[in-house]
Image (cartoon, rainbow, N blue to C red; front, side):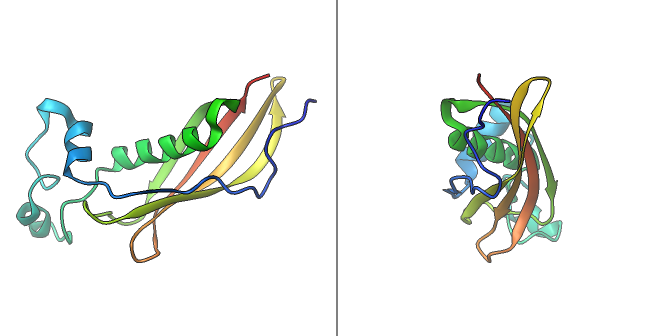
Length: 136
């Protein structure tokens, strides 16, 4: 078994960002449905505090944070997310995480990560996980 370039308990590099309407438009592209993602009144009519950040976009943000932390040491095998509460466009979020487990599988060095998106109130809005595989 070769040496893995990370240790259990290691924190990933936090990713701070403020998802806004430009991120949402880029996510949906030209065929975007004109829903509560684009209209504050429609969002509030659904009981939301404002235009939400789409859940799949938040999964992409998690993926990007893992890629940034991983760099050229390997690649992201999987990312999963459980959405706990909405994030509102224009409010800052921070992706944090730790290496939960380092292991070898099929002759490859891998690591499982625990991930979180923390909202402006310090509450986790997404709890996620990822598995990465390291290059030989």
